[in-house]
Amino acid sequence: MIRPTLALAAVSILAACAPLPDTVGEAAPAGTVYRLAAFNDAPVTFGATVRLLNDGKVSGAGPCNTYTAVQKAPLPWLEITDLASTRRTCDQQRSEDAFFIALQAMDFAEIGGDSLLMTNNAGQSLFFTSTARDPSQP
Image (cartoon, rainbow, N blue to C red; front, side, top):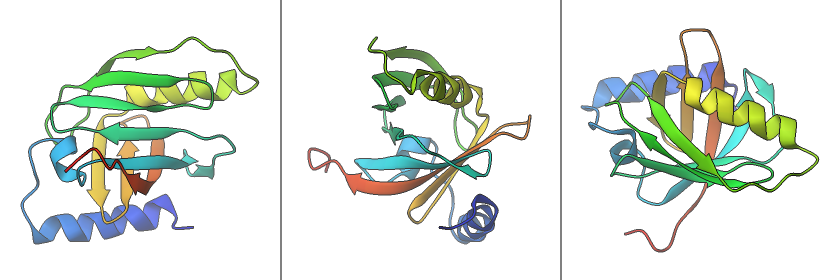
């Protein structure tokens, strides 16, 4: 597993090679689904995903529910708001609640290769790796 700090260094090097797109959705290859691999540098024991779209929409799943949200800031900043999820409960509800809170608290995003790193000024991080592309996306 790639440590988030190593991934951040790799993303920074790649970002210096080409101009950045305006939105997180433009930076992510179309239809890419990212799976949460680490939360504050610790491996996760629950499943969670995020998908960033060109139109500023965000979607994904926690261990219990699917969700949608809106990403309002240009790269490299994040401003994820208006998160709405289905309302199923499960034995990993606390993990999902923590993920949703952290997702909305992230301030920055860096995409490089198959990884996505979200961080904030409080020192929190969410590190994702790509899992698959949605075949409905070009």
